Image 1 (cartoon, rainbow over the protein chains, first blue to last red):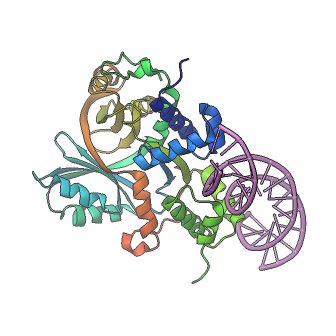
Image 2: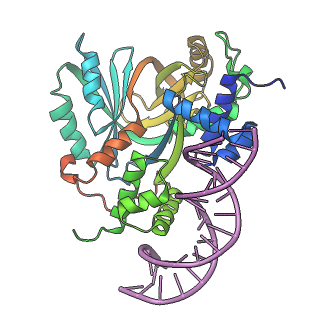
Length: 176
Length: 176
DNA sequence: AGTGAAAGACCCTTGGT
DNA sequence: ACCAAGGGTCTTTCACT
């Protein structure tokens, strides 16, 4: 195989790291075929650029917030950005998406109890400036999360043809 | 202050780790007031139990998947579980939520192009057994993510009162 | 059970060349 | 890229509560 491009080196570092975030730089360097110093400098750059983040994911239930809810929100025209930033600043809210469609915002929250969720929804979310309508749905189960998905990327990442790097990818042949 | 309960020791370890996932065990031990050995034993247990996960979060765009879409899916009665598991097995899909309400499933996906998204939606998702109706919304911006939210937990975690009145969950169960 | 403490081997990180 | 020094990890062991 021809030597990897710089971005492909970065990506293989990320792919290996996703498989085992706690592995040492030397182990990583051996796997991707670079020196330890190169790997370290690339990692530092990727983290600085925000392409890569190290994180610890706690169980929300273990941290005392077992109630998991998704809110769909219609915002008043012109109020969406400020509303999104307000939601993002709330410690009950884990995700805030700005989306197209009937609703403008989808937000995901964790609460200590269903009563705490109700209080948040009726007394805090409902009173935020710019909220026109909101719906809540309870999350019953989470079957997959982003950091688990990252391992899929690692597994399928080398077969670029399956995904297409370009604008016109072929039909993905992945089967369950 | 009285000595912490065992679960509070676990939680303070998690809170510190969330602030800096790459800190050393000795630094962590100093912060939470335990020995290095204790901290490591607790961390190993928490990871084994699934209460804590170390992860690397790559930028989806950097990995070649800049198109971010949320699907809402109505499933045929009795087909939901199998459908969720199928979706969770697909490498395009990062999140799968089983939820209450009009739609049964909310899934989040990343794609190499809007055309790849269209192909997935019309040719793969639409043909899955049990899918009755589906909507897609494009994600324009993500203002907050779960691992960023985890830092809120760390900041507010000690003041339980700030979170309201819910019954303090004793044993958080084994599910992740 | 769980913790603190200590010693030693090993390896990694770090900073300098 | 190489190297050396300092430091962290991990294991084992033991006494303590």
